[in-house]
Length: 263
Ligand SMILES: [Mg+2]
Image (cartoon, rainbow, N blue to C red; front, side):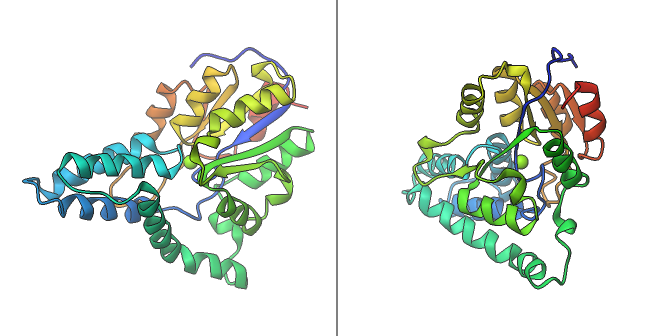
């Protein structure tokens, strides 16, 4: 790994799912079967295993971008098999509903106080966020999950106040949002040299965007539970995307800040 040029960090951009939050852990177990069922219904001569291998491949490849891009790809695959797909947004709503049902118990357990929010935080994430904020670093949150859900999760998990209004997520007009757009806006709003920004995420999308804009890229290879083992190559993938630093969680985040001379 190549060390980034040392400059004081002034801003930090975080991904949400898999980087700070585990609330949506297991989302692949909702998305993959939904897509595989639809492709199986096209009646082509393909085994369930072949279909699942195809679906897990493209879902994984598009993770980190807005969910709609996974659905656009699904529609292309349905068309390729002679089917007539619904609009990508309709499939996204179907998936969102299934995922909401699957995680509703977690959400209500936190709301009722039956489970502490910490059970759904990536280890070390809250302390790391507080450390950054305490050192005067301005923190941003950007996620491929819908913006209203991103805000709700941040409130439930207890770190909403550290981001204030600097929260960005997927929009119905999906062309108006991307992590890359948020990164470029942070750099121009604060007049940053790229290395004054650190991008922290578990997806290759934000790590690649961070590298391409000259930011410091910190890849978090959290373990995600799903029956398709879709996170097994995460560390290598983040490394390939250009991560300057890698860690399985954010426990060692503060040590990294000392190394980078933050605040
Ligand atoms: Mg993520």
